[in-house]
Length: 94
Image (cartoon, rainbow, N blue to C red; front, side, top):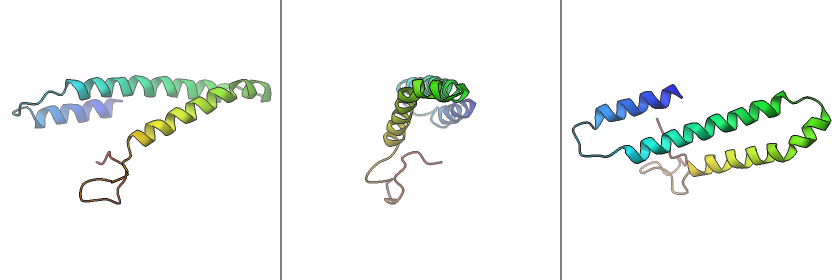
């Protein structure tokens, strides 16, 4: 997640002369990073399981991980798109 830290640093530098509080977004980024690490660890655990019996035991975990990933993706999309680019539904743009 080094890239997000670099982007935050760039943002801090850019707005350093403005009266803005980045604490809420920095907290959200840290929470998102923790959640991403957790879900990636769960994915690795599921992928490491071998055999049909083990896979069946993980079936609900797989479903849960997939559902959470879809909810995250939906959180970053908007029905109306970006300002001036209504066709661009993903709200995070570089």
